[in-house]
Image 1 (cartoon, rainbow, N blue to C red):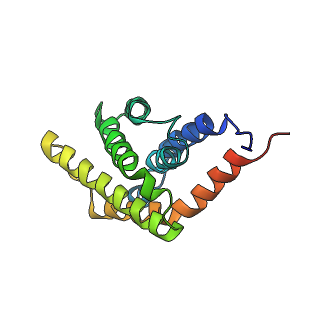
Image 2 (image 1 turned 90 degrees about the vertical axis):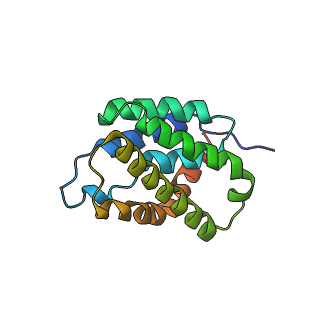
Length: 159
């Protein structure tokens, strides 16, 4: 027997991730900002692939590009690459122990930084400072509590 699901958690979590990306941080902490959108998208791609996919990742990325004022299509590309890799390896990733899943997400977030560096190189934009390469480590540390929080909200019984 399946438990009733809370359908409001998906849009609310994506909106919260988008807002967390917009929260102003002091200049010293700016490079450490985790890629909240990628973390939340990764959760939904692993746990509810019937509700999220490549198209959703693309639209979400375009919204993020507009919200963050970045190059139009940059975040869309980054999120589509992330979604593609997660969809391709979902069967394995979903059943990894949390420690291995955390490492896999860290590799995906590091891959995202590489994509960003390549886009900046191709567009002639200034490269990110070395401190920006620490953000995937913070994202790795945040994955287990974020996964637990979203699981709890998604699976909580109504009523």
